[in-house]
Length: 78
Ligand SMILES: [Zn+2]
Image 1: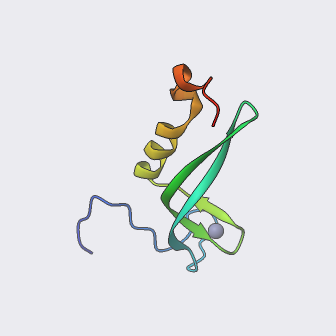
Image 2: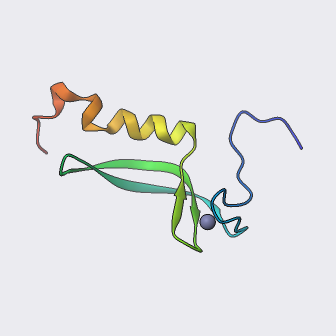
């Protein structure tokens, strides 16, 4: 095993499936009824139960795009 600062997931932490895959996708989240898009998020997708596992970096990116963290900009509608 090599040391790596990136989280390496080989099996799903929830169901133990080895089919879990690292994917890069645009994802949408909802905040207070408002849907927002986070482009090109790297996360792990488990096909068995449709679980999605986000590592620290992905969580930071999601937070960075969240309206909750951009209250001053929340009034701006696309
Ligand atoms: Zn799973």
